[in-house]
Image (cartoon, rainbow, N blue to C red; front, side, top):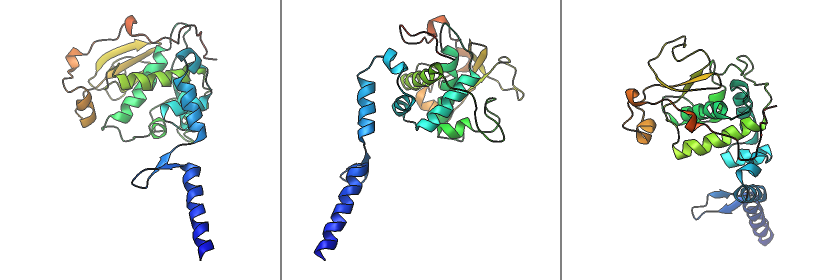
Length: 229
């Protein structure tokens, strides 16, 4: 009997220390040597250094699995245009995806499900729901910046649509506010009174939406050149 109790305790301890520590309520605190390493790497680096970090580190910083982050970066790379000057177009595309996750009018709360929603992204195969575009350091960094800027409330939370045709070029016309034009894509904001959007900006009015300007452009970290190939 004593041996069984000892074996049971050892199994419990092995489980606990294998996946993390335990909260007072018994739930597991997800921790690992790998996450500690990634967190230390990220927190003690400049943006120029973070830009070149491995994909899995940037994925961890965004709270995504490496697979989901990679898929996200491929979509951003395929949907956005390359620029030697800035990464604004790609950042805004990533912001649109994150805004959709936060808006209660959109059906998905996970990045990968939003990206694979039928009919939304041209670079996602509508039969296999795969994206065969190659990601780049630019598209990876655009996602990092999108998470940061959404958290800061930098852009309109209702910016959820973009296309390359024009502000009135949707097949199902909607009444939207013109918000931005960068890299060949037009970005628009429809009215939304969902709980999330109202909490972020309860005084939003379509007539008061102003187009983004050159002062809003997002650049690569200082000293970093184009890396979209």
